[in-house]
Image (cartoon, rainbow, N blue to C red):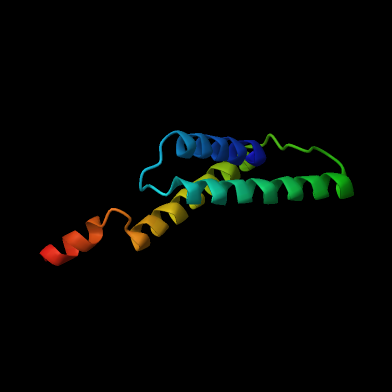
Length: 97
C-alpha cells in the first residue's frame, strides 16, 4: 500500500508542478517522491521475486508507512524552502529585527 500512496503523491506533486510552479520549488518535491517510488518499487519487486507472497501489502502498518514517507518528503521540501528562501521573506524579516 505504501507504493500506491507514495506514487499517488508523486503524481499529484508532478501535476501541480507542471501546471503552476512559481517559486515553490515543487520540482524538488516531485523528484524526492519519484525517487522514493522507484526505491519502493524495486524493494517490492525484489522481495516478491525472492520470497513470493503479496506484491502490495494492504495492512494498517503499510498504510501508516506510506503516510509517514509522504510527510517526511514534505518536511524535506519545506526545509529546502526555508534554507533557500526563494521569495526572500526570511531575509526581510531578519533585517527588520
